[in-house]
Length: 202
Image (cartoon, rainbow, N blue to C red):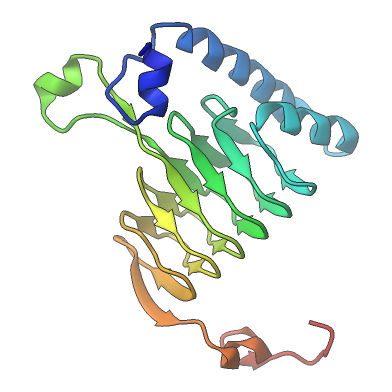
């Protein structure tokens, strides 16, 4: 395998070989262009983000600034929204489902380095895939670490560092991120904590 194939297989690889530097540079040039577009240049923004991201659903909206390594290793479902300053280090694959929302400063890190200094100084690094299910809301300043899977219908509280898998239908928060409770049918009537909806079209 060449270094790109090793990277995508989750194996140790060297990031400056086999054209990887050139791929990252090409992606960063497009990301730079995206981040410099005016807010009212909506058609240009929509077209360019679809060139950057490997696979998208019908509706995708990412606020600038946005940052990624390659872009081509990211797959998002329909109705994806990322608020300001989203960072996705996609040396490993990132797969995101439908109806997912990111608050500001969400960071997904598939990339990592060996713990031992001799191994780390060898130049080898790795990327391990991150998977996020459908109907997920990730709060502000959340970090998701390599290899994490977040299930369907999950809320991750602001400021969390997600180091382990999170199952379906829960609220999880903290550093490291821990489940605090399940999401139940009773939650449907509230819009914030104990504040009930005063409308019926939700």
